[in-house]
Image (cartoon, rainbow, N blue to C red):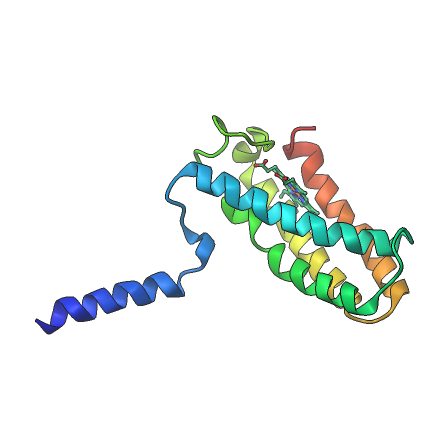
Length: 151
Ligand code: HEC
């Protein structure tokens, strides 16, 4: 009688240990997941951009907090590009994305790397460092949107 119990425990432990984005019950969940992650990313990214461009007064604490969110969230949306979620959904992702996965992965890796640098700059307490890191990071967003997102 002990075995099934242990097995059930193991199963639930595995479910907890698994990253939340490792699996989706249905394709629509993956669409919602990536769009939600991009939306959060875009919000915090936009606020840093506004500070970098002088449209919003620089606030070191807000910038540092935005940097933390960006560094964490930038790693998430790509997990939502699962097969089967390219058509039949309310998505702006172009079908080409699923045909050029190696290129998409490269673009995504660049975005993760540059937003990581941006996060460090955002936490430096130095506006000039934030300004210097913002442009290259924004370029990585644009590079993927240009080729793989509907206008
Ligand atoms: C590897 C490709 C790729 C990179 C890199 C990328 N995006 Fe996107 N982004 C997409 C795709 C594809 C969509 C459309 C997703 C959908 O509708 O299913 C999207 C959608 C979005 C949206 C709209 C979300 C919504 O549904 O409301 C925002 C905002 C966004 N991206 C911000 C960013 C920002 C900011 C960066 C850079 C820090 C970035 N993206 C980098 C591919 C990318």
